Image 1 (cartoon, rainbow, N blue to C red):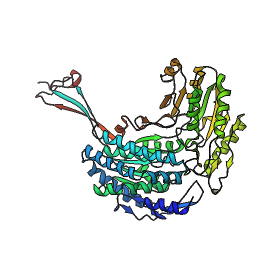
Image 2: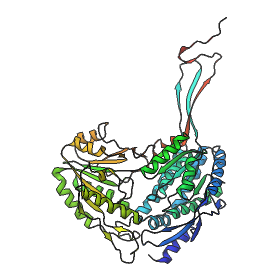
Image 3: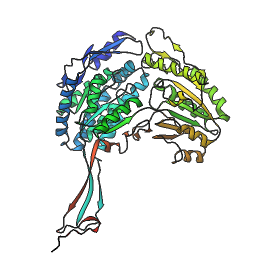
Image 4: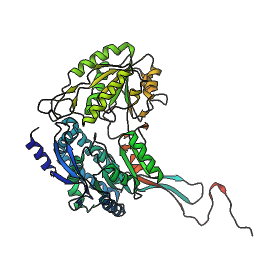
Length: 517
């Protein structure tokens, strides 16, 4: 990478070599943080990009106080007006789509096409939220009591804590924040410490909108250690809901802390996603889906394909074709538009993948392709590895765990009921897919007897969900849904109302409670 190109990119997004790690939003909301310095290294070449001065617990307190004050004011703004604000945020994202997408690639490592796609997802979510701002519907119902009206309505919830992961460093912020905004909430965002610069860039992009509408405190951000900022968000009684993306282990800890104060949560945790390939499947279509699902984002999506559960009659043909396709994957600089796969995020991801391969071998599994370190000329400090294909059994301990790297297990099955059992027989329950032309298979797959995952697809892969459908999983994947359909309800509080417009006071269930004369 050319250093001048990097400097130009940072300049476009208002990023300096040293950046403050907290803001309540806009050009006036920047807080001069005093914590330790966090250097962001690019996984592309292992070199530093820029740094952020992290926030302390005291500086978090400044942000949280302002966020709560902002909520009390922002909730009074009509929802369509809040939608207009989100609309203007979408326009700002459109202007900065290319540089922000490139920064996602530079800091996280996903290929440029995926980086651009992530920013487009932000724009799409914003457009969805704008329409939603005029559709925050309640319902009416008939009362059993005469001259009574019953209905439900939805009110803004409060301050929302958003804790995001490195693999989608900006899109997940939009899923939560833009829906919460039209609902009348304020947000405190804690981005991943592996991708702080993309968060700084987002705050810079939306700053003119924040200034225009005097929204200081509505769109806040705090970068800091989990023991400082993360714990503070989770244990702050002013934060009504925490939406967290990350590991199952971290999610359990957060859920326990939130439960102690009866706060709400949206948890998007581990995935162990499978594609079932039936004996009658279109193998070419299945091949393309598995290839993107397993290799896209270097296997670092929560919806990445981890397991292929395939009928024994087509296994050999499919695996041979898949290995041939893997051999054609071009690994290298993700900013090169001819590259199919960039680096993993850091050295720990490579370490985890290699350890998983050794565990697989110890349990009797066999590597069919890949799992080797790659040296890219000129980018020797980057974290590159060939995606791996391995033959495995579903009951293996390593297969039950999620390895957040491009490691794909091939698992054979004989009958369809067994394939469904294997799909469900893991602790996680995020995304799943089947490739078949058999209507009985597809309908069983989508029935209560089929996939136990939050997402179940037919003849498309596990990865690449559209924003219109609510996103989330079951079991150890956590609970709650983000983005589409009625997920907005999580960012509001429901209220049931009954109004008596008569002159009598009848009780429900026909109860009589009169004083004896």
